[in-house]
Amino acid sequence: MFSSYFRGYQYNEELLKLGVEVRQIQNLNYRAKKGYQDIPLVDAYKAGQVELDVEPIEWADVVMFRRYYNTALKCKNYRDPQNNGCGFVTMDEEEAKRHEHGYRRQDDITRMLWPHFRDGWDGGLVYETDDNHWEIKPWNGYYGDVIRERDLIADMARRADIMTVAVPKLAQEYGKYNKNVRVVRNAIDPELYVKDAPRPEGDKPRLVYYGSTARLRDYAGRHVGFGDGKGYAYEAVQYHRDKLHRVFLGTNEGTESVIERLFDEQHPYIEGIAAFSKGLANSHGDIGIAPLAGDDFDASKSELHWLEYAMTDMAFIGQRFSGPGPYSVVRNGVDGLLARGAQEWRDAVGQLAKSKDLREQLAGAAKERVLAEYDYRKRAQEWADVFRFAAENPGYGKRRERVAA
Image (cartoon, rainbow, N blue to C red; front, side, top):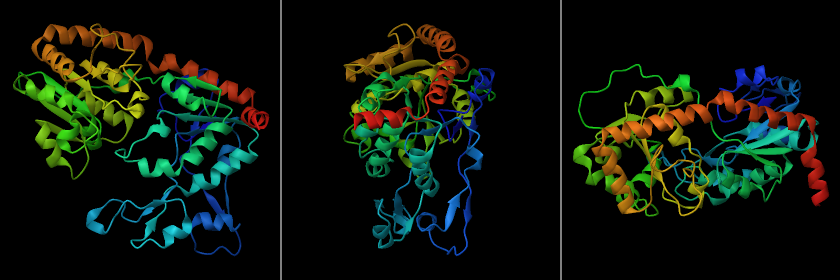
């Protein structure tokens, strides 16, 4: 099985034990033909001046594409006000060439690779996603890309022999494009959450929130200029701030002053699963929170924050939705707390700020359950079943499309 990525690299060894070999390839090389000119790669490909080297994939029985790919053309200094950057995004080559600030390409290889597999691949094809691209909102940093790539996303979903998603809500959304969708929930590698730094001094419980600076929309909302977020979590933490030490993990460069207004301690955004997992563990949190503004995009997120807080021994507070949501799997009062609205958030934060026993009880129950149900070694069999179906039913998506037409 060939894949560029599928929700982490940790499955490879376990899948091999189950008879599935995975090779993850980020990019492919290309060969220039005689007469090649120094022009953009996609243009040269369309003109027949270059060809992709697909030899690294030819051994595979199954190919997986994931999410969407950033194939749009953007302002050369996208959203960088110090360098004449703006929010210009397009899929049109000629429009990009006319842009006053210049433009930059993103993922040329995928532009060439997808049509090759959509039309000419004889093996199995899987499409994987963990986001609801149909409900993405303007606050999201990938909004400009996604709304211009929805045709590509829909094309991948329709053509796939089988789709995988992280939560049932996504299965409903993508079921409009592909009836063969399987929910494979996220998983964790317990060995990555290593505490190898001493706990900082101080007697107050350490309350941790992680993400990127953009996630302040979920935490503080209107208090930092994100009008679609109510900021109930922030208000609750502020109300109990004398009892807490507030920690943010994920500050994007240049936004330190914003985080400083809201938290007592901050750490920069960490790239890579292993490095982040260790960083979260070394934050030595006692309470981990996961607020969400609560729109349809949020409702399709997964329970990953709960999993990772559990693995780092934090008592959890997550957003409660009126219907199914990311943290519906959490047993309220048993392995975490759920809150919706100002008073519930204030009560939940207050309970955990006050009671060490309750924090330890909830954190212990959550960790025990996560280890029992979400260890990647248990999830590997579900992935193996998906890949076997694709390998045994190559072209299933093509045949389904013909029947539908």
